[in-house]
Length: 324
Ligand code: ADP
Ligand code: DP6
Ligand code: CO
Image (cartoon, rainbow, N blue to C red):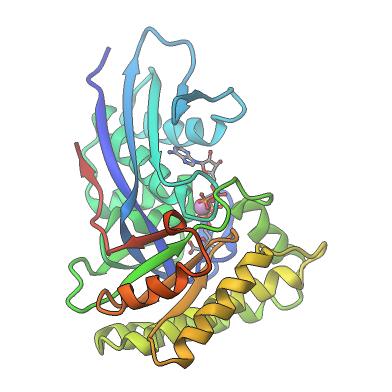
């Protein structure tokens, strides 16, 4: 039995979204993306390789996964076994400090933590670029969770260079998020299936990577200028362009729920009163508000008139991967 290794990875929320793959096998995206890693949401994963096991054993939040459900985890473990010349199966024990599959990026923290813990447990000593590429094979958004703060996933040309780079691991101006948890249950259409359907069927999809590439360049400038309002405007518009592609897919679908529109309307209303707040959404109904720490109390006070206080979670920027 080898030594157990535990890693912690934080989730990240994209300000410029990753949406659509050019290579689904290697998880090469059609566009580069940019995210903010969040402090309060993370996954702790412990991996132990053992010659006593007859298959990989995976548990998430105390629930033992079936062989079918642990397929994605085993696929990443297979890559690591190949690289490390490791024959043994692994025990994986993972705890999500974030709702699983609800559009709050559990696949980002989950697969980044798995890549870090499993590669080290298998005896590999990967640098962060290599770890980012490995995490990418589990879930695209996990590519970015290797680093803290603002992170860019450069789409690259293939497996060798599709990886994240840190833009600002320690952010030097006032920006954070408020997550409005409208529905913590697993989404009906996983991110993977949603983006695949869009790429295959939406006549609007070809416009997406073009728009996202433009938005990314503008976002990098806005970050350098520490311009919260411009960052928010760009993030909001980019998220809505992404969601427009689901409505135009066949069959059409949406991640919005009625409360999502209510939250959007509320945030637009708050903005009209002079508060700097902007929304973004991922593949799920929950809304993330981009704002400053300074204005968070005022924004929270208004949001609390419409949503229960324990559904409003303040998230400061968070760090990259760490071994515990
Ligand atoms: P999310 O919005 O939470 O990222 P996705 O649809 O992208 O939702 O991903 C959900 C998938 O990620 C599920 O298959 C789930 O089993 C997997 N996942 C979530 N947490 C973990 C974890 N801690 N370890 C391994 N896989 C995980
Ligand atoms: C809307 O990384 O969850 O959150 O690569 O298939 O695992 P897979 O999908 P995933 O997709 C995330 C999509 C998104 C945007 C983003 O995080 O950039
Ligand atoms: Co995900």
